[in-house]
Length: 443
Image: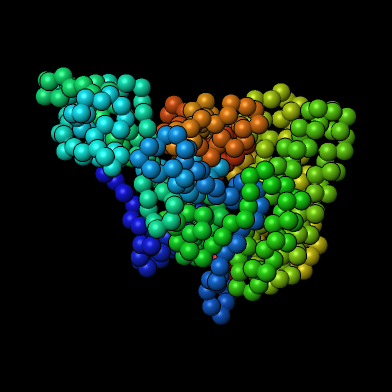
């Protein structure tokens, strides 16, 4: 059965080099048109940050999901799946055929003897099962979820699904018949834009994902707005100094906050652009305070929510508002930064994320305005426990989206949006590649 190496086993030096050079090369080849304005020219040496620190909203955040107290009598209660992200999570599935065993003790439950069982059970020898000639019918899948440990802590990114049903093996009816198979949450795979940046310089978010490289930390959080960005930076200012590369993306939740206020009170539309412009300028002041520590900053603008799946479901007025509000915030942020001495190109890099949502500049090779996650399938956490069915939970459920919960014919390589308002891996890859290119060429 598939397993990742223990967390202490890191990718080789060659692998790190490939990660770094591959991301930068991809960025440079795709974005050569923009490099002349990226502060190029001769440098004494290549820029490599000592560490990477991320601030902002869920577009840069990684979270854990703890296992339930009721679903795993084999004793893995409390273990956590690490590094869940607010886009499509990377997972590696063992063949859905799985590993089959007979429940020879006659019990038709998930903890009959087999590869995954309580210590009192007698392990059974896996049987040979043919997908073409044998059959398996689940009795209500999956019956149980088991977390395998990947390091010395209480952490697991390998979830074993245990399924009990009936079937035929070599034309002989077998009841009960048990199947087990694994899903590994591959949190070290570049999915978020700031992961792409960190990996391009041989860094990773090990504290949030034990499978990743070290050297990077994220303090970004779901739902964060500009006011929360100030709190994040203030709490971790001691970590910011020369040699640190800081990534920041903020604004999405401010835009949605103002939009929702206008929906409730339409008269607020008259002041919405002014409000968001001010928030953008406040964010610029926070970025400037980070630059004052000696750290370098790569700042990503908010993708145009007026081109999001959320906007596609609105009438013309709602869509126009989201587009105007995104522009108001981003303009305030850009103009706020433009008034500072940071624009020497050696300490500050701006990433125009809205390039990838603008109908004029976006690529026709990607699917725009539609979500790749089937949100009706994201009500279960990795351990099988249910997410509360409430509107308030919608914004967080995207963290449970993975390759097994996509819309029909959905592809993480072509869809730009994961859900109504969050970028899919294809969008993050483009933003991250441009960010890495800007940092590599400017700093």
